[in-house]
Length: 118
Length: 114
Image 1 (tube, rainbow over the protein chains, first blue to last red):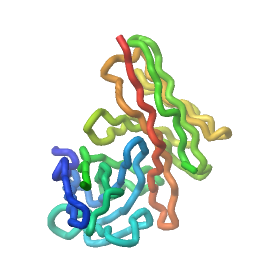
Image 2 (image 1 turned 90 degrees about the vertical axis):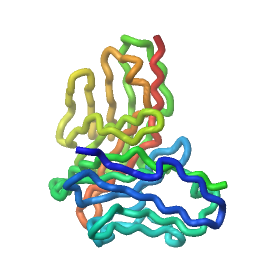
Image 3 (image 1 turned 180 degrees about the vertical axis):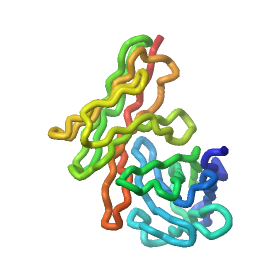
């Protein structure tokens, strides 16, 4: 059973370009979470999605950032018109369908995409 | 300020015990977690503890929870060079939608020296 897969692992973009980060959850997982890790900081929650639904996007910047998890295919985190401050590691995590029960958050993390904006 | 705080660095000799400390603020947290991040890799769940427990032991790992002081610690016995990594403490923040949003500390870099 493959783990959470993210691609690309490294992405370089010039200021003003678009960045697309992909996440394939573990087999059987229907919940996806995106986190951002700035240098020497912990992970900050961005968005929580289920298939075709955004459940919680309270950590997502209001502009330039969007996320989707379509019925078929990977989850996509899209950053338009990137700026230097977007340089970070972006991690995706997934969890099984019943993992919200009793408050336990069973999240499995991918290896991350390291975005560098030049 | 941060909801979850950790010391940033710990140096330990191979074979000694490591103790990593964490404080958190959300008294409604139901679960607290320890994750390990090796260089260039994602986070790996090491262990977790339910908030009505004081202690949990799992092989070389011991988690202690002081709910009154909102203090969590992770002890690694007989520390090995493979334990060198960044260790993150995380708590659940229960949202209005009743899902457990993870709040992470900044991580403790553990360096194991021979």
